[in-house]
Length: 217
Image (cartoon, rainbow, N blue to C red):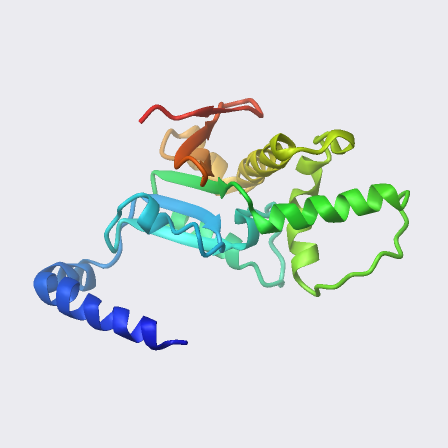
């Protein structure tokens, strides 16, 4: 199963690295200085580097289930996403943070299914918990999907849940004091984007609203 990866690495070494070794030497000497952070989903179909045609060193990417941003909560817990945001803002001094969601997100779908089940069970707490980590993680977006009309579920409802989750993550981003400070000083801009996989279209959050508009490219 891993052989295609090794074959791909051989191609990378021959066709990319060997032809532009100076480029990689520069990356090593000057370190990484990306100006854009992307918080995207772990979904194997959504790779920011491929979507945006970037080269090594141009994006600082953190990927997680459902491209979620937790609220600011400094304690002794394990906060991988928060640590990445802190490093991007306070050390790399990125100019932009993009929360990149997408259509047919399995994490958001699971959250919606869980919430619909809860509604049908009249908020009983005895439903089966089948995942030790995913359930608590995706609950970060529970406040967002509660705004969806589950009595009339449709494809449009699914897209709305995915987009509202992005808005929720943008709201959580602004609970980090140094993110808010950088924004207030006009040194950082945050963006919410939703990738329509069916049509290869990119939608952007309308600032200050819960709506999204298609980017005219």
